Length: 284
Image 1: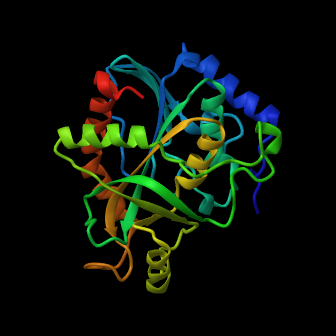
Image 2 (image 1 turned 45 degrees about the vertical axis):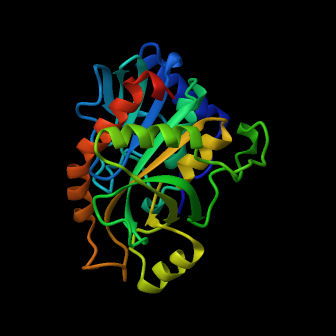
């Protein structure tokens, strides 16, 4: 069922070599940004140096995204920061296994990346976070049923990773300041990842709330855990696109709603990231 579930050293070397040969100066990158449903990197870069389909990275599926992500790798400059953007991601629910979810992160880290920003679309469990809210992730709950690190001890310095502070408080604070200056003061909360692709039932949302989750989605946790294990600083940002089942004014849930809300809120994300990356006090 999972043709891409275990990452070998050779596959990692292939992917990192591919990035180095495709994009100039990538070994000096400052930050990696991964975008979610409906989110676009348009207007982020001061200079764009290269753009290719994500599927061209070795050892990734050739398939298009079920979530309608753009699936691109974009390399350029934002302010003084050399920035790599993954416009889109593969998800565990697509049935390929863990490698398509984590290889882009692992390959960027192998090229020297030490700061990662993961953005996603999520449903609100916390009633103080209506659709259109940005939530800075302070912690997460992995309900995907798998760890991205299991079986990959040969690629790690230690198999046991401290997850006490997965999301960097210092960078969370600086992103919040940048967002406030853009007139988009974010909330902070706990993100829970379920496998999907089905949305949660009312009972599952109630359970997530009892466990302490403020928002719920189907991504980010594998990527953030991988980046943390590789020694990177991590920021997570959830764009609240809808109420979770049984919360607020819930209607029938559809992915198109996430896409449309993502397009609307994407401009806010770009403004926040640009301010964060260009202000001297907000350097990652």
